[in-house]
Length: 329
Image (tube, rainbow, N blue to C red; front, top):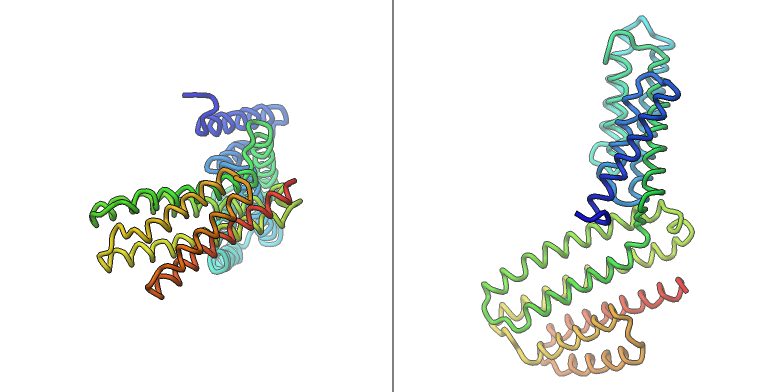
C-alpha cells in the first residue's frame, strides 16, 4: 500500500491527531480526557476534505455546547430535584428530535441528547465541572482534528469540484460509447446499470463536495465559483436524463443502432472529449454547428426536440466551464 493512497493518508491523519490528543491531555492533566480522543475520531473518521471536517467540527462543538449548557442550567439550579431534571431532559430531547431528526444537521440533535444523557443521568456524581470539562474536551479534540487535516496532505473539496465535472462528463461519454453500437437489449441493460450506478454516485459526491467547499477558505473567497459548479451539476443531470430518453426511444421503437442517431452521438462524444481536454473554442464551435445540422435531419419531431434540448444543455455546460476558467485566471 502506497503512502499516497487515500485510505492510508486518512488513517495516518487520524493517528497523528490522536497522538497529539494524548500528549496534550497528559501535559495539561485535563479530567475526562477520553472525550478528547472521541471528538477527534468522530470528526475525522469519515471525512475526506477540509470542508467536510469543518462542517462536522462545527456540528460537534455546537451540539456539545447545547447539551452542556442545558446540563449546566439543570445542575446549577435544580441539582437535587430529579423530577425537574428528567422533565427538562425529556422536553429538550423531544425538541432536538423534532427540529433536527432527518435534517442535514441531525447530528446536532443526536449529540445534544447524548451529551445531556451523559452529564445528567450517565453517572451518579454529575456536577457542573463535568459539563465544563466535557465542553473543553470537545473543543480540544475538534481543534486537533482540524490541525491534522490542514497540515497533513490536506484535501480540499473546492479543488475537487472541477475534476468531478470532468468525471461526470466522462461517465456520460462512457455510457454513449458502450451503448451506441450495441444491438442486444439485454446487453444494453447490463451495460447501463453499472454506468448508471457510477454516475449516481459521482453526482452525489459532487453535491457533497459543493456543500463542503462553501466552508473552505477558497469557497468563501469565491462563492461565484461554487455557484457555477452547482449549476454544472444541474446541467449534467439534465443531460443524463435526456440521454436516457434518447436511448429509450431507440429501444421502444426497435430502432437500435440507427445510423442517424449514431452520427449525432459520435459528434456528442467528440464535443465532450474536447471539453474535457480543453480544446480550442473555435474547434468546438465547428462541432456544434455540425451537431445542429445533424439534428435538423431528424424526421421524428419529438425525438428532434429531445436531441436539440440535449445539445442546448451541453452548450450551457460548456459555457459554464469557460466562465469558471476565466474567473480562475
